[in-house]
Image (cartoon, rainbow, N blue to C red; front, side, top):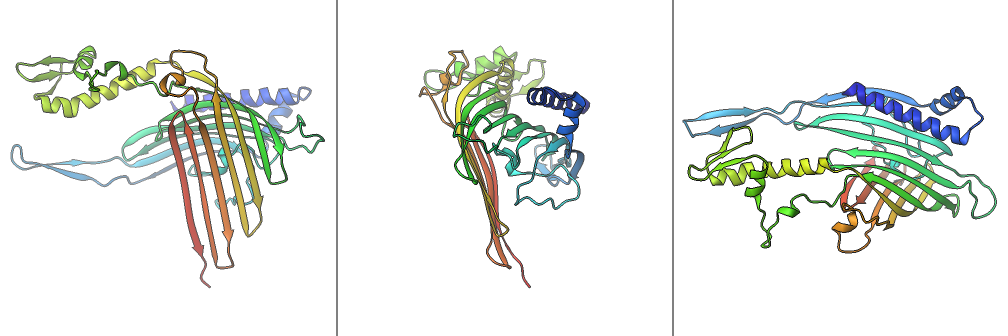
Length: 368
């Protein structure tokens, strides 16, 4: 599994870099293209681990006193990646090596620190509190900042291709955007263009077809359709493989049915193909840095989405014809004096009415 993922990651890198580089530098030899785009990049692989939740003793008195110990396996994180991203002025590489725990909010920005190509390809296999999942973040970002004449200079544009899979947030999509970029001044720029997202049909609820007019769920018939058998006379409930899973209606409804519904929703969601969404996107980027204070902020808004009339279009799951998708990031720090400094950093995303975000803030006071 890991080897296959590494191969896929490398293939994506090579194909995308070669395509973009050939488009921009058609007369340059392929080896020169690869060397140019891999120069100063870093390949890294790391394993991190640690103790998870402590063991929990569960007591029972059904047949005398008995004790069952529930143990949670240790947490781990295996990371493999390739990155070439210029650091902003406020970003200091405090560590000698990349260890896979880095989290740079600026990676989410539309425009990079320098002109040209930057990229990140990273895969994380994780276990946290006994739950296994995988995170992925891959992107190629191109920023143009040429000082040519005229407000509609074609050299001023931004391009980003991104694939994100966040296991905790249960979000996964591929996005490409191309934008015209207008520099208001050295710090502030505005952009507008088109975004194209490929994802599962978010908004689709497989349980809708099982809802009754009184807003209750027809879960018994759903379970029977999924292969469960019920012996009402003896209050026996059997799984599709014949295993006895409940001996009372209370256990059936409280324990078995939630699992049936969860498995059914996962199965129906996995059966659907991804759908593509074309949207208008507009945004801004602001960056100003000095040794005593810095501010980096960006925002994106998608106010209009093309309705292709397909069965699983998100337009079918909302009351209005359109909706707003948006994302934003903020990094602010100030050194008040030699002793005192404070900071706030964070990013927020809302796509298809699904939210994921993270932030941190703090204060430092040096005593001397």
